[in-house]
Amino acid sequence: MLTVEKKKKYTADDYMMLEEGAPFQLINNELIMSPSPLIIHQLILGEFYDALKTYVKQQENQGLIVLPPMDIRLDANNIYQPDLIYIAKDRIAEIVKDRIEGAPDLVLEILSPSTAYYDLRQKKNIYEKYGVKEYIVVDPTEQSAELYVLKDGIYQMHQKTQNNEQLSSVLLQGFSIDLSKLFQ
Image (tube, rainbow, N blue to C red; front, top):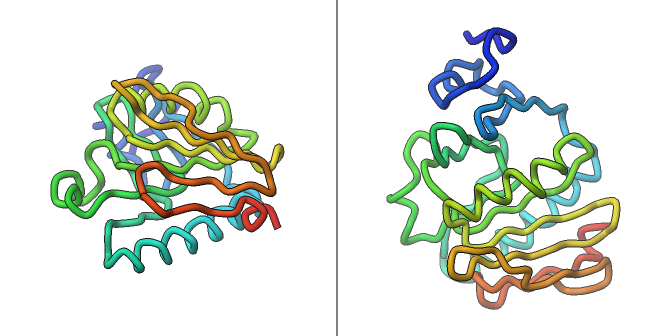
């Protein structure tokens, strides 16, 4: 097992030596530890998952939805555990091995005090670099969400919504969620 204090830069090989379930992500060669999420975080995640699962079932098993903790390995320096992962049906065989190796089609991150900086800056930049087509960031404090769409290799904010508005996916035609359900 890896002792975290011994190194300043870490790799995917180091990360894989951690105990299963360890509360770390590998972000730009740093092991970032975070405490378990707040209750509001988990309630938002549950509501979003339920809505997306219902949509996917109506689309005749259109893709795979994965909840945390699940690693996505983007490169040797970045292994993340997003709050929710969606992979289109035609890409599952390509990137799903024992773990997910490559960019999912959609990633949801729910901001927490301990991870907001990484979600909004470093992880967002890496998701963009590796081609996550749609990136959704939910802010429980502001009761808002931002939806970024990858266009020509660069994220563009497609939609910013508040508590009583609908967040509508571009990638998943017909999928939308009323934010007031997330922030009950």
